[in-house]
Length: 464
Image (cartoon, rainbow, N blue to C red; front, side):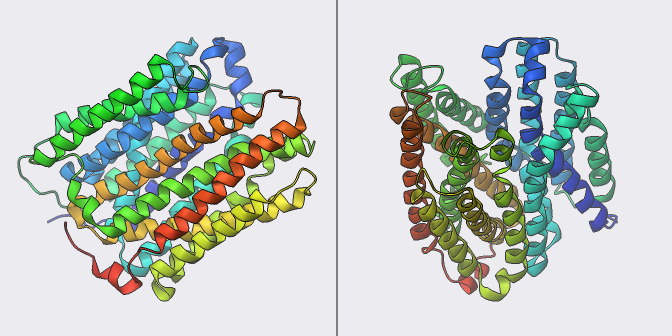
């Protein structure tokens, strides 16, 4: 007889795992000067962040599929085990090159945390309870965004930068213990066929794409043979991946999930909206500091209103979405993102600081109203055996939106800014970026209007 799952203990373990995965995205930035001073290799440091993003993105769909094949607990244990091992190695790194390689390993482990945690919540809860729990888990990212700089600053000032990695060990071990001991789910005993060729071609395609996006325009010109070749290789291997998936007995990413309108719309929305929020976190501090002339501390704190408004709206949306309707919540949130983006595009050089607070609160409320219902509805349109893949595809599109957004926004910005000290050029470059964000927000609103009505969304609770 299968032991009964202790839901509260499992949820606690998943929250802890999500927290350290989210925290690691923000905490490292605080220690940048000290890491460079200790390990040198300043020219390589950007890859400490970039390689983590790259390996996480590539690992997400692979772990999502493995969770469907071999069970959530086993894949969670592997993922957090790799994350802990990567953290230990990062803390012990003796050169920048070593740190980059170890961050790659850490990113692979982090790629399992998001899809598996959300999938387990989808397994344990249904209906209104699932919406509430997704709101809570969405809040973890905002809390980590607020606490990351503070925790990182404390370790750097009081102990050593190495402890921003070592702290993951006891916390990760606690999460591993809680989930592996208290989560019990039946596993179907049958031969599993792993889609090795699909995983390989997907990895090559997206690694080439992400490397091109992360290094294009900065390390290499966009029209350089290397970047053009990377894009071409990505396209070729993507086509090969799709060809393999059509014929695989147990495809890594079943193409049938992309015949579901809800999946397609929410993935497009995730790609678009997360590109906007990532652009805001980059360019809002630049505007505050360079255009308004306000201190670096104030500019660094400017994204806090969005970080607070997002989880607030996520929790409210999670509780109300089954009452007002999934589509209504997503459309309402998208309207708020459009309103905030229009205000953003209308900013002038002399616009007061308080305008930024209003803009970020509105967009944060909008994102919270979009992200939680989108995550819940993705889990509602597939069966248990494809829930991991569905979650992974959603997370992949959001991460890809962030990466593509930064690349496109950076290219537009650099076309306008030729003199860093010119306030007018800086403002013109960011205004062009803000106009594009506004256009993206409008396209997103048009896209989510294609969602079926609430009752039709829930009626698609099926295996595909």
